[in-house]
Length: 421
Image 1 (tube, one colour):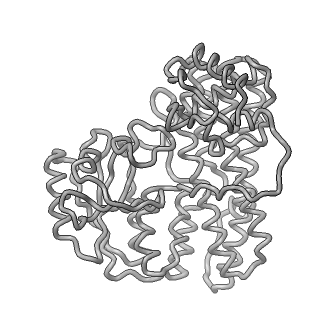
Image 2 (image 1 turned 90 degrees about the vertical axis):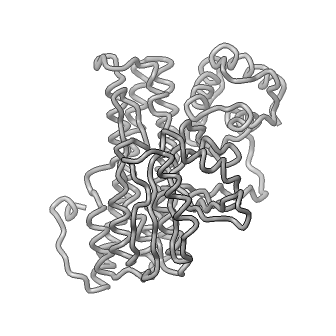
């Protein structure tokens, strides 16, 4: 339980530096996201303020935004106590990529191995907009790559039901028709704005929050049944509210998945998909972070340095994509019957990679606050460590793939870049 002194200090910092946060009823049990409405950047700003203004020592190696839920958790972080022997709460479910999660839903329902489809996630496309802000979504985003490989790997048929050339009203009418005519083998994938459904989870406090789900009619005609595989949620929701989320101008998209001829992927197709996805010398997300940082430096003169933290606000949404490496390693590890302890070692490395982006976001906010060369150097080192760790994971992944390919008698050659691994 947080002390009265800590709560008072926190209230003072919020009043002075984060005036939009409602802190009149601040208590040790106040939820940082759902009650105070802190987003990831504001949380990192608060940690910086606790360190710089109040003198707390922040153990950066223990920094993880996902572990901070309530005010009392903040004090535990800055005033660590001795560990006890009790078993903790189970970790939160991992959210990786909503499009791929929706595609994997019927695959898993048939008892097929869905893990190969995640090969395209760890370096999936990210965006940096004209204001040098990192973005996980863009109007120009094209999920055709995943849809095409879903068909090639598993034999499904994908057809769009959403037509961007038509009005929202026409598209919602089309959705209603599809819902009424849906066959059991069909899955309607729909993009909606999760921000418009506050009863659903929105841990990242995004507005808007473009997100793909699967919809079907409920027994009650005034409700719709939603499958949200990425958030491991399913349930009945008010029909009008769901369609209101589909009407959001921030979203536009949807396809029908016909799984009549779904089958397990052939090893040759899995190998081809891996080779298309694997980028041995490119770390897409970390390089995008570097671009954002570079464009906010004073010498670049493009964006104010004090906006660097907010420019990386969507980094936590993108960082979780790196958990896709676990799916890749698990697929090859099991086929090769390799020791579980080796796999657990690489899972720890992947976890450190994901959590490392929390440290990057924290350091970026600190640079924006202090503007010192020392803090910029620490940020640069953190980013370099992210590159090094991800290249180590990629080397392990590629060697496992290569051994699996030989075991499966799949012919193929590798590029000079890959061979250097």
